[in-house]
Image: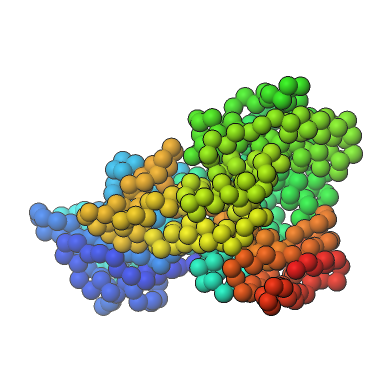
Amino acid sequence: MIDSKEFIRKNIFPVRIVSLSGTVTDSEALLKKQDLQITTDENKCICLKNKKTGKNAEIILDFGKEINASLRVLTYTSDGVSPVKVSITYGESVSETMHPVGHKNSTNDHAIRDFIYYLPDYSDMTFNESGFRFAKITLLSKNTSVKIKAVTAVAKYRDIPYLGSFRCDNETLNKIYDISAYTCHLTMQNYIWDGIKRDRLVWVGDMHPEMLTVRTVFGNHDIIPSSLRFMREQTPLPSWMNGMPTYSLWWLLILRDWYFYSGNRDFLEENREYAVALCKIISELINDDGTDNLPSYFLDWPCNNKPQSESGSRALLCLALEAALNLCTYYNEKDIATSCLRSKQILLGTVIESYGAKQVTAMSALAGFTDKDKAAEIILHNGCEGWSTFMSYYLLKAASEKNMEATLEALEEYYGGMIKMGATTFWEDFDIRWTENASPVDEIPVKGKTDIHADNGAFCYKGLRHSLCHGWASGPAAFLAEEVLGIKILSEGCKKIKITPSLGNLSFAEGTYPTPHGIIKVKCRKNGTATEIEYSAPDCIEIITES
């Protein structure tokens, strides 16, 4: 059930005028905060004017950061015709606002971001909700002018506190944590969506890193149980969630990991029938010779339709069998637990070939197929080259177990690369090579440079269809809390926590971590070869430290 009381709407004024075209006067009026009520006597308005022929008047506005919002336009009066015809185009990048649907794969999929409306005199109108940072308004009516008092973005989001935090002596890592948290926050809409422009859907496979970020930053929030419940109710067995077998595997991992964090036994019991039946199904997917009966394979888009997709899916299946074993133990389903353990052992007796795919190497290392030293070497070869945003948490986790210093350098290079390109939220995918001679998202593309949004992407996210706010990219927040601050959950409901920081090339790190019982605060600082740890935690939580 959706808690609508958490949602608020906030008017955000533009912070910058990106560009003007045609005849536009007094444009700076839109940057001034003022009462959002039209009167019969307005003297501070922008004016867009068109002649019978010639270029249309046009303005592109920057609202400062990516938001889930609708555009609100307060129109004063027009001269010559009323209502006036305008086009409004949203963009996660400046480039996107400059292109109509169809150009460079721009789209109205999932949310309308390019549309035509009419603005009557003395009106206050609010238009389509989508994910955007930039908006373009173009006057289409000829031989007329229109005066507009204000344009705001009406942001819709959950008004919830950021309980988790992270700070260290590397400002880029601090920004990465904050932007990861904000990216996930925007996708906490009716349920956990994956994107706020495109992919306004509950993709349960993508939820695992999102779940990790929710518990790291927002704590024991009901959006995870409600999203899991929604997918369970939408997917009667033996169907696969979102039509993909691996996504049902992720559902089991999320259920296990959320229960281990929350300790919510009632929610665990609510899922008993479905979870046990699904555990039984996946326990029977492994043959005695180690082959599998997965109907299809999907790990992430960069691996899709390649041999490494099968390898990555088998590693995921091994992790899901471990989760199924845990769940069946909680449920006291001994026979199915035994079957899950047997299938996992058979599967681990086989060899997984990564084909050089770093995300497959990470998953196979976490599942127990690949030596951790070898995995770290492969993952960190040439830094973050070959990484994907969906797999970032698993790449970071697998690599950091053997080389935290190089892992943090790769994290800074990869996610810092998006920040240097103007990102205020993290993207559906990213390749560090895209930054070479590229125009950033917050600037008009320059001739002779690549357009980082329009000229890149692949698979379902080619060009401007590419989502620049995707919850699955938020994994670094959980990684920094779990592996750098070292906050590790040892028992159901966070009743026992181990604090074992790994600072790598940092001299200090501190932060907070929400549990169902209250906030844990951690400070750690290098002192020679040792790491000093300070912490505070609720009395009911047992804390073990290891420097």
